Length: 293
Image 1: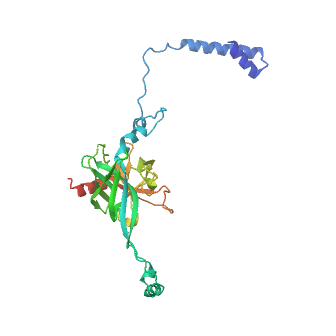
Image 2 (image 1 turned 180 degrees about the vertical axis):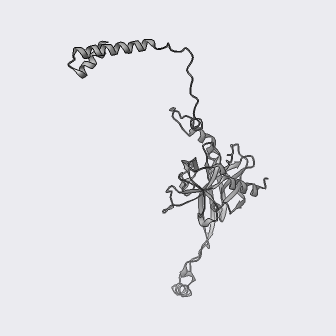
Image 3 (image 1 turned 30 degrees about the vertical axis):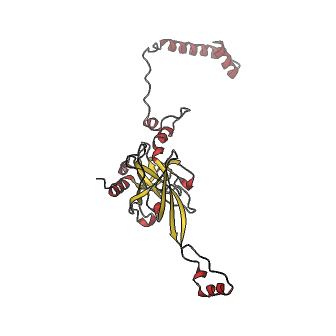
């Protein structure tokens, strides 16, 4: 025991004879207790079963909890949607002024011709809900006045899409593309969703390309959004920005709990208040449009 004595001496020098005897007694008791311990069991140690969170999250390449394995399964079913549309515009007020037109005639300048419609291009998101039939779900407002719709998969394949139908009450529209070999996402029962549940938003914010953000359910049954014409919505702090419209809000089980549709932000960007139409409502809209029982 020289190391122990030296260490204590260094801390409590000088020693008295009584303190040395007391210390020897304590060491002897400690050694006796160690000797009385039962021999180690030869039975193999029981390995603790992984927690539900570990099973859901999986492990990344460094061995830490990660959503990467879940994202590899679900993101192929999330698509980017490009929409070209024609928006009617009024003539410039000068061109409706007879005096201004006569002035142009006097100076020999022909009145410019204006196209009454302007071409616009919008970007959004969608989710494949039936790969065999090529059904893609997105937001109805994204397709307003659309003249051309292109759906681009994660693997960069692009398809011209046609609109099958829509349901304005849920802001849901269904597009049709050729059948694709992609695992469509399943709908969860949104009635079971609770405040505090983790959720993941996937979409194409600002046309950057497929992006994944994570948050929690901030509220359920939220009403009074967008003039209340969308009914009760899921509120989340998962980052939702322009371009996320029509993309899925999914659970950690990889199921769709809602379709992202709106946000509140003073500058048009995310401030942690986004909204999604619950999956039970959008599933009913899908069945209505596709005439599925």
